[in-house]
Image 1: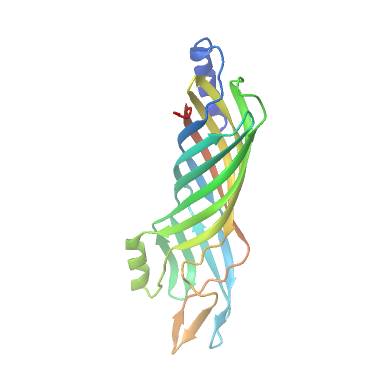
Image 2: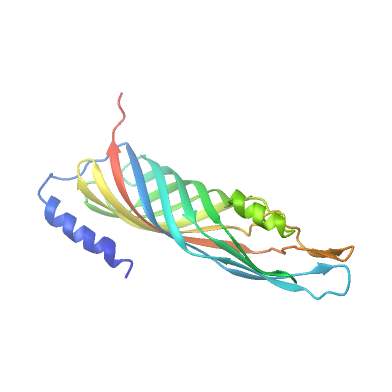
Length: 238
């Protein structure tokens, strides 16, 4: 169903613009604002407990899907290759479950912000209106907790902070040229990073009878993104 939306839009655009210009030429630069959806992988993480006779706890990390907005600055290097700098903001409310014996659920206002540098290869020449492409890159992801949620967690004895992770991304999509300097884009990508720890130690512990939460983490986190954007194109001014 998600794919039907851009396809229906393209059909309408084509009927309007089909005879509006003879064929696209390659522009040097593109600015692409976009919007869509983001979906982050959930986890159930066995975490050891140091001290006393407490058994390991299985801590849950549940990320809710949310809206996504972004901006991309792209340089077209030749007929097929391009490079871009991409920033996205994804709303992703986070819920911890079974964090401590007394905290079975802790919901936080949370977002995932990513900055990546990417290289793209498109399969058709620029004079084609419809141009599919693949894209790969890397960068950094900020897993950000709103200050009010940090204060709420601190009052419960759970000190949290934001986490940064190196990120690798890959995906693909297509561009459809509407006019000499305007196109629509649709793409999907997978962003792969380490699991954020939010300042929690790798193991929980019991100190002077007080339970100190922890979060064991190994493996990778996947964030899926679906983007629909508008490409505004121009040449160098010199």
